[in-house]
Image 1 (spheres, rainbow over the protein chains, first blue to last red):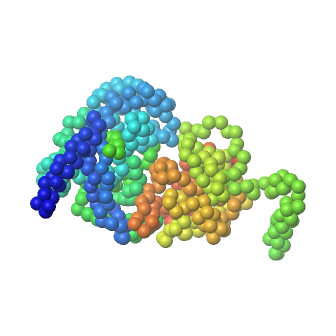
Image 2 (cartoon, chains in turn purple, orange; image 1 turned 30 degrees about the vertical axis):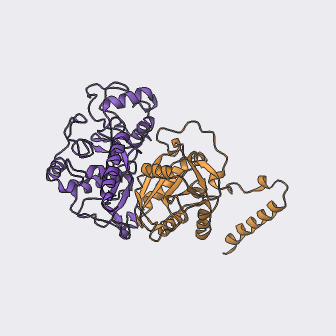
Image 3 (cartoon, chains in turn red, orange; image 1 turned 60 degrees about the vertical axis):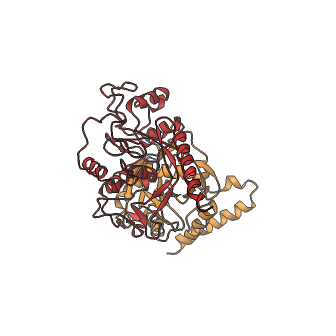
Length: 259
Length: 214
C-alpha cells in the first residue's frame, strides 16, 4: 500500500492538471490556488493569505474590445457618462464617442475609470481581480512559479519600473507570457483591481514602512513586510492615490473570473 | 442669566406632553424631529452629473430604515466613514465631528446633517449603530448612521478617496477624512487628518447651508 501511494498521487495530480486546463475559458488562464504574502499587513495578521484558484485574462482589455462595449452600452460613451463615474479624461485618447481615431484597436485601453471597467467586466460575466489575485499572478516568473527566483523576470520588471511610460501605449499581448500563460502584467500599463483602495501608502518605501498617524486611523498597526520590493511599493503607492472616477493615460485593466 | 437655557427645555417638555395627549401626534411634532433618513423625499429631479446620489446602492440606518443615499438630498451632509469597534481613532473623529457641530451657528445647524457610514459590514448591524448613537449622544434629528453591503461600502469609499483594510483582529486601518457634500450630493470640501484646524471646513459648511434647498 505504501508503494502504491506515490503512483495514485501522480495520477491524481495529472487529473488535476487536466481539470485546470479544461476550466480556463478562451483568452483566460487558470491561476491555481496559492498563497499571497501581502506587502502591507497588520502586526497580528497572518504573513500568508490563501488565494483560491481563479481565471485571469491573458492580456489587458484593448481599445477595440472597449469600443464594442460602449457601442452596446451607450451610457458608458464619453459624452454620456456622468462625471461621478468617470472624470474628464475618460477615453480622451479616442476621437469620439464610438470612434478610436488614431488609437489602435490592439492597444490596451487606458483612460478608463474603475466604474467603467467594473461595468465592462460585469457585461462579460466577469469581474475585476482583487489586489491579492493580481499580485499572485504578477509574482509568477517566466519559467518559475516564484518570479523572485527567476533572474530574467526580475531584470525585466526592474527595467519597466525604471523606465518612463511610452507616449504611445504598446499593443496588448506582446509581452512574454509567464508560467501561467498570462502576459503584460508588467511592462505595459498599470491595472485596476476591485479593491484598489485597500492600499494605504502616502509616499515611497522609505517613508511608508509605518503610516502617517494623522491621516490614517490604526496606522500604527500596519506595516510593510518586504521593504526591498520596490515595484510592489510603486504599485501600492499608485493604487493608493486613485479614486473610483479617476482616469489615467497609462492605467488599464483586465478581467478575472471564478474557475 | 440661566432662564434662556431653562426656557426652551420647558417648552420642549410641554411639546412632549402635548404630543403624548394629542389625537394627531404627527402634526404636533416639532419640525425636524424625524431623523434625516426618514424625511419626506424632495422632488428635485435627476441628480447632477457629479452627485453621489447617482449611486443606486441601498443602505440601512440605525433606525432600520432602508434608503438610497438620495433620500438625504436637499441638505448638506458632513460625512465620515467609521466603525463602532474602533480601538484607535474613530472615537476621536466622532468627537471632532461633534466639536464641529458645536461650532456651527444655530441657523446653520438647522440646515445641515451629519452622516456616519460604517465600513464594518460584518459587525455593524443597525442595532450596533443604534447603541453607538446612544452612547455618543448623537442628536436624532441631525445624525444619520448607515450600514451597507460589502461592494457598496467599497464603492462609496473609492469615490470619497477613503482607503481602508481590515486586519486579523477585525480592526480597520483607514483614511481619516471628513467629506462635505452639498445639498445636491456633490463633494465640495474634504478635511483630511485628525486634529487639523477646521476653519476652512466650517466656512465651507456655512456656504453649503446657505445654498441648501431644505
